[in-house]
Amino acid sequence: MTMAVVLLCQVSFAQPLAHRHLEDATYFNAESTTTAAQSELNDGEWVSMGQGRWRDDFLTRIFSVECLEWDVEVMKNDSYPGVYRVMAPYKECPYQSMREIDENSYVDFHAEDPLRVYFTAYNTGLDLDGNGALCINSIAGYQVTEKGVEKGLEVAANDGACGEMQDGEILFPQASLLVKFEDNPNDQWMFANLNFGGYKTGFRLLLPDAPDLELSIDLVGVNDAKDQMTVHFGVGKDCEKVRVAMLPGKANNDDWRALLEGAAKYQDITESKDVVFDYEADGVYTFYAIPYLYDTNRRVTWLTKELTYLNLGWKLLGKAEYTEAFLADNEQGVIQDIEPVTYSVDIEESTETPGYYRLIDPYGDAYPYSTKNDYDNTRNYYMEIDASDPECVSIKEMKDGCGWNFGIGKMVLWSRADRGLRDQGMTKEDVKAKGLAGKVENGVITFPNDALLVSFPDFYPFPYWANSTGKFRIVLPEGAGIGNITAEEPDAPAAVYDLNGRRIQRENLTSGIYVVKQGGKTVKMMVK
Image 1 (spheres, rainbow, N blue to C red):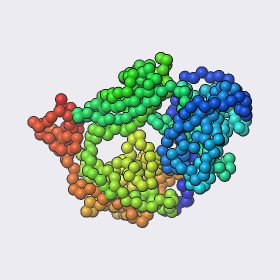
Image 2: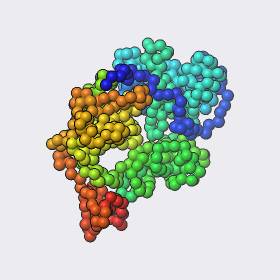
Image 3: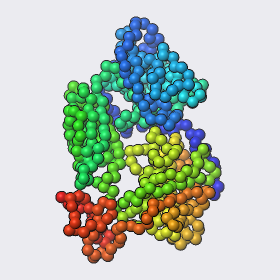
Image 4: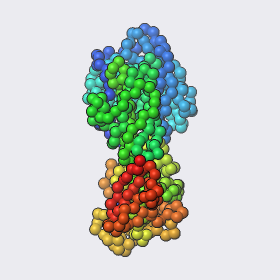
């Protein structure tokens, strides 16, 4: 198979400028004012406001680290209302700098117009790896530097790149901040603040005099019957109330507005507490928390998670040993500096189709190259392996990607056997004759050389062959390979199973949720 080499690891600007907000969401109530002219800010006296909080989402763009938060000193000057000076913000950074940071350095945040906040280029002095200190900037500040305050802010606002301040908290839209090494030219700024949105992610500056509207969302778990979910909401002391909800799907403006208008199911709380929600099915859910101050809603906090507590149709087998050979073993070495590795991954088997397996998040926490910063933890990603015919194994296309992103967008994985059976009209005999089928032998799943596929649809339209040297394998847990729920005749008596796939006699049923199967039909039943 011949095709051009694409050095995907060299791509730097993976995040587009457009769609900075969550579907253009705006959760701010501040009123716009006229922005003061840019100044050297040398008049008057700068006095300390005290300790604010700085949450970084610049280091995350270059290093595999999380969005960490720490204390910073914030100054103000009566001569420049709306301007906040942050002294040496990276002096107290949890990561140690290879050079001393000037404690007298500072970066000024211009919030004269709270809907058009910006700051200009600042050398942090923070050098983590000897490649030089990091410089940070905002796109709005870059435009102000290039075009002047009025024109620059107009351009930035039209591009959705201005920060906004409400209740002493300054946030910027996704990908509206910039970072580079100090010796790099200005055409090598990289987008930062890529983790914007949700709970404890993305850059923010919290001023010392900000009201305490801090919220936390922690999933406690389901009850014994698995029909209710308990969530703990932490509520800041200045919140008059907090509107909380659990709604299906990812965070979106329609749900947010419905909660504000009372059109969606919600609960109002006034203090930190556990809240119970009905839980009827597995899936992706968003937990919302909207604080109120002075009878007005403030910025929403949300947490999106895929819940799989019921796990109907699947049973957990244990840990499989997975040897990765999609990204690390593809033709022409498309992705560089990644080696095949073997690690343990949770594996499940279908309760409907014995031999149909799925690996849970094979590129998540267990994958040595993955970090919390570059993996999508809002949902589970499954690699489904159809080994119901041990002589003709295929891997289903992971159309949503594998969840891992190191700057090249979505990475889709599957097998050539699946493509042949699903898209090219091949039979199982055709697939086996062409040497594309995987096999299960002695509890080990393998594939022939070049029988797997990997594609990078955001950058290149055609897939690459993978498993070039045949390293791919899945070692099944001991005893795997026989399903607990077998097919029955359509008119056979109904069979009842627990959520682990064990068959239960009707006279032995206790309170809980069960799977009832008759022939090809399966339904959920609750016993109270």
